[in-house]
Image 1: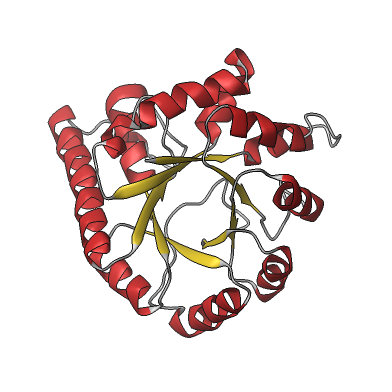
Image 2: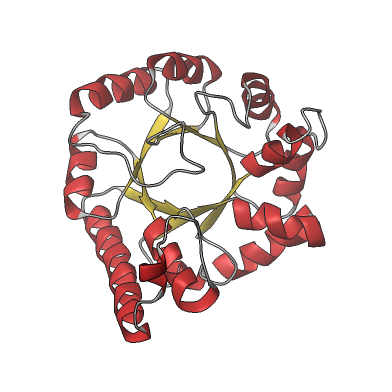
Length: 259
């Protein structure tokens, strides 16, 4: 199983003071030396963390393949085609969100997605779709002729956090937190089964399967047991741990868990 390290949160820290410290370029060599298999970044429409210059330099200098997450906004896709990362992962984007809150709604965007994917393929960029782990989304992904899907594991991670470690994010109500433990356990087991079923079905349809969102050092073990998942993209938890351990050790520790 491969590990993609999302380094967006280094830029989040930089943007807190609007200075070039920490320098995100310093991370890419450490990622390589620490055993990461891929660099992942998200070029958002509002440029809240990664900037155009960051994306240019990371893609130019990275010794590892770069997975560039982006919306299907025309201006963003034009930039991606010029930058030519190894892969473009198409994600939903809402400027009011703190982080991505779900998978792409493929059914409502098929025509636009077909054009975007065709353009990316013409520029020799492989394409992944960030989707919820449902049969319908996998079938539509196959129809769109992409190479990869990335299963959104946010719901799984949130239920895990409620069950074992408090809030994953602020979207949970008090009522959700007060659910009986056996109810939460059932929801948790169902979320794992959903990801397992989706992975197997996608693999059957000859789609490469990645997964990500909300994965950390405690819950990642549930994903590593799913043989059809070829890659995990993990960012926030690695960068958070690196504050205390250093980035090299944080990546090495996660790589050991993934393997």
